[in-house]
Image (tube, rainbow, N blue to C red; front, side):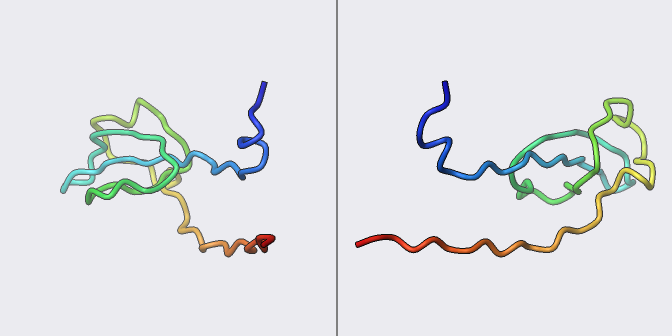
Length: 77
């Protein structure tokens, strides 16, 4: 059963990232709510384990996302 808190808070979708080395070879894959802070991570459309140790196909790289402003709810006093 879902808690009341989970019903009231919006869910953030998991995003997918690939770690590329200096030569453009995929070294790691990760799913997270926000981008990793270390350099070399790029957002990808999907995670495919066969990319490890290879260069990413051009269709794998995700298009940059525009920040979505969310309306603020007024708090009752």
